[in-house]
Length: 538
Image (tube, rainbow, N blue to C red; front, top):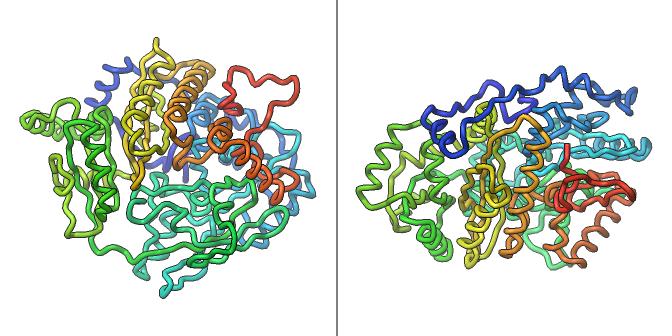
């Protein structure tokens, strides 16, 4: 059971502690709870399906509603305010590769667009159907969730692409292995989705990003199948795995994948270290990763995120004790929290410098790592909206880029309050990812909400590009970043991506408008949406 208009299991809650709510009110003002649209109200607005009567396709309004949007803030605005403009005309649930092939052939016969659907956790609009004269068929891969083969000698496992994170680990644990890919959306996101968006897990420093784990697989494309054999290495031309990695459903549907697995670590620990300032913490993390110390995770929060995390964590006595202790050691308001993951008992956090705080804070983080997204539901109910943006930059740009990202979010709407903070979530020898979170008060008018988000999103995206950052480190392109892709890839790069789409999908049926932007039809206005974010108005 999933929330139809929010995050996760309806039975799971993450309440804001009273002290945390007071903290938010002091910065953002008293939140204004606004009644959400009723599910029945939205269902009544969904038009009849253009694919009714087709065998094997689900066309009921409630099924189409639950496959209409992901988890971006514009998606929440559309669902919570009852402003859902489009839904798929039908949803299919294939149970085999042959059935996926049959759905692609059916799409051609019906002149339909097709959208691959994994866990529905996209935060940049990957699964959203766009207004079109063509009917839209969403292909839900949740029934393709089996472990097909394990080669324990080679440490390779082959799964169907609709398998979710917990299903992967459950099917490997009995054999003593793990994939080790733990994004925050781990409970709901899927292997195929990770590959299609070039996902990173929280412990990518040890296990690697999905492109390190993806050894091969199978793509069913409108023009025909593509098999990617799991070679250890090959010099036989360009690596076609990297055509499928990050394809976002534009080339076809990933049906299975062979991934590199590891023995489960015998000892996995998380601990905490405090640094007196953000630059000091950044420098410590840089030195650790460039010395290739075998940590599994180095997650450094800036001062505002450190303070906000502790206040919203629901342990006010721990916060009071911690503040007194840190103050006594001259760790003032600028101190930063580093969560350290290790799979090696011999490696202690003391080697990083700073003020080691031991295991309790790290263990709290570990226990709540997949529960934290539920806080977004509670914030919304209390009158606050939350969104995130992320990039990756060279080490020489980390401090300046993070500062510019936070400043740009406030400058986009200088007359209204915003709470913005950042952390380094993934680190590399040559740079790091910066993950920024921003909160602002909700408004009764959804157009005002969307307009404010558009301005902040555009402002922070320009700040990222101005500092040499990628427009997306792990969330993919989808709708939100499509307008920026040309600046990152250049004309030749866009031409290559466009040509690949035409080869695999000559008629443009697969997930149109994602990754590569659609142009507005002649004479049609895209309204208040900036060119960088066209397609995001509900």
